Image (tube, rainbow, N blue to C red; front, side, top):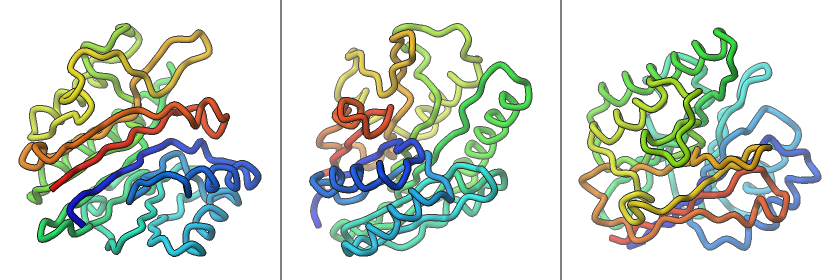
Length: 247
């Protein structure tokens, strides 16, 4: 391979009926690796894993415990489990990674589903602790050639519109990534474009789903865009973010 297309999407813990529709649609997508968030140890997600296996995809799906959420990776090419998530000591079902070789360049792709929150102190602290774990893991990880993506449930500090109910530490995580050798793939290509991956009930837009790339491989970014078709088809309430790298 001399190129890599990544398809990152929140699948909203689907029923078995919706999984069949999702998989039929995913099979039509030309991407190489699918990075799926908001999974559960549910009948729908277990069926999705079986469908990927049946069609020859290499799949990584750490089963979430209890009623927790998680992530799933499915690849058309050979991958192996990455090591990044070993540094996460809190609800680590919400993060996974895989390694893939592009030519002679090893790439580790990390996908996560950061907890959402409401106004309750318990959920606020839960989300904050998970983000703190991510920060520590990145600071202690010495690998290069990283891609970090998922439903991060954070916004860029200059997000339009600005939502005052977001805490400063939530905005700060975006800056942490930028200040630690990551590039926001979408913003690199579209510095001022307003784009949203999730629309609330009051029709407010949020760019929750992101793809960041290590600065040392950012010159390989060949495209990044949001695909709203899954929302239009009622396959999920999130748009997908597709990122293309060309080496």
